[in-house]
Amino acid sequence: MAEHILLRHRDIPNIDRLEVYRQQGGFEAFQKAVASLTPDAVTDIVKASGLRGRGGAGFPTGMKWSFTDRKNWPHYVVCNADESEPGTFKDREILTGNPFQLLEGVAIASYAVGARVAYIYLRGEFWPIARELDKRIAELEAAGLLGDKLFGTEYSLRIYTHLGAGAYICGEETALLESIEGKLGQPRLRPPFPPAVGLFGKPTVINNTETLANVPLILQRGAEWFRSFGTEKSPGVKIFSLSGCVNRPGNYELPLGTTFRELIMGRGGGIAYGHKIKAIMPAGNSSSLIVATDEALNTPMDYESVPKLGAQLGSASVIVIDDSVDIPWLINKTVHFFRHESCGKCTPCREGTYWMSQLTERIAAGHATAEDVALLKAVAGQIKGKCFCALGEFSIEAVLSGMDRFKDDFEAKVSSYE
Amino acid sequence: MMMLKDTYSAEIEATLAKYPPENKRAAVMPLLHLAQRENGYVTKSALYEIADLCGVAVTEVASIMGFYTLYHDQPGGKYRLQVCTDLPCALRGANEFLEQLCANVGVKVGETTADGMITIEAVTCLAGCNKAPMFQVQTGEGLEYYENQTVESAVALINDLVKR
Image 1: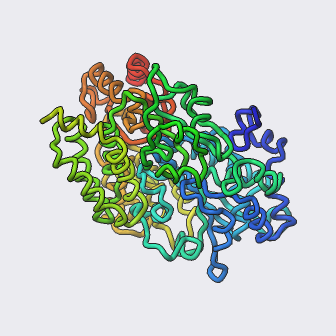
Image 2: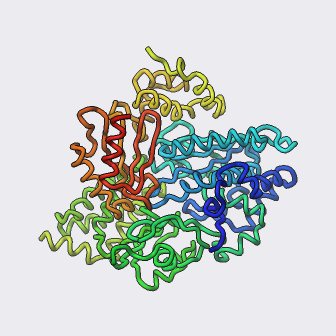
Image 3: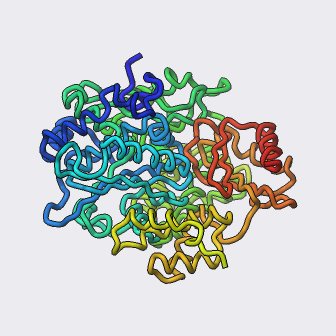
């Protein structure tokens, strides 16, 4: 088994302790960057590595850093540890198992964009994790690895944690910024994008936890090393959170481009209780439903290949659906989640998720007519492309793909009632 | 009346210091967490105090409290047992688990036991999908996760909590 790059605590016991992390070369990359590299040189290395955002959008990380407006100061770095997508539990493992690698990643990113303050935004449920991170930040300050005039230079850096309080929408980066500012977690109109106008109105780089955890080793071992994993357009490894109807659910760190079959049937040990696989949701609750054909199972999980199946890789939270699962029941679940989590800012999402939930409830219960099914499709169609942020758009992915690709399940529901 | 700043002045100062002085409002959420830790819910007087500390209107603080689901403006059971029933957990039996647990404890979802100790709630994703059925217990002091649960293990835990 290849050594882990992100989930290194699985190979190296006690790497969550600073002295062990440092024995592994921890914080050498940050020190080298601050003491001997220009911020632009650091950004160039990350650009050359081809690292792309692991939160879901897959935007090139180095390019994002280079967009930071240099005419407006101070700059901020924000680490998105809001991890709230049903099916996603990778950041939680990084934060608890390998926290110093994340903190070093935050520190390097901060140096690269000239930020002297960085915030780690954790979902409120991660309160105990935040408390541990605070202690670790204090350890780093005591060790001279964070704080004022680092490594004999003029560069200073503080990292703070900020807790959310139960709102999925705060994973959307501009809603997250609003939340840090002490406001309702509602997304902002873009442009301007955060690297121009972000936290407290200042240029801000927001990266996902997993993205930042990649950065220390990219600096330590080089962009070429990083590119030796994954595919040309999706380099590196990815943590796939595997859940649902599989024998061995869990986090699996694998190169991007690994097939669904390898993850689900290989690592995940196949489908539980002797059932057969029916569908795959590669991006958690926000996912389209992929019909689990041989062709789909043989598809590489990377940012280019998954869209060919009419879905997105997103945060790579792979929910496996077996043939005992009724698709109308499933979309009722996903829709209820979005109805609960809609921030209420825009009408299509706020009203649309409400109406969809009324309909999916009836359909799932077998109390619907064919008109209800048609109406659900119409409502979803009216949400599509009209929402203020991606959350609203995500709410219809499972609905429309489910109705389109699993017609029989819906027909069975309706006819059994009539 | 008990003021937060009588008990937690150092923590309040440290919280405010995390943010630029002209953006004190950013401390609203951390201070709501602090207030809730004190009483298990946010009292009206804490609401006013936080508004003063952060220089915003009380309605603003109240709207933030209403928006985010982890804040409570009413006292609940001493322990809030919150079961995730989202899709990945439901695929691993979370709905049946919740139903049987409630039947066992003698409450409906969202209700509190007669002794005021335990509230059982259904919540959205807690990032523990691979270890469902799972839940968190919200206590005055914070949060605890319990994973790979059975009705028996959860009932045993409830019996322990009641005795704490």
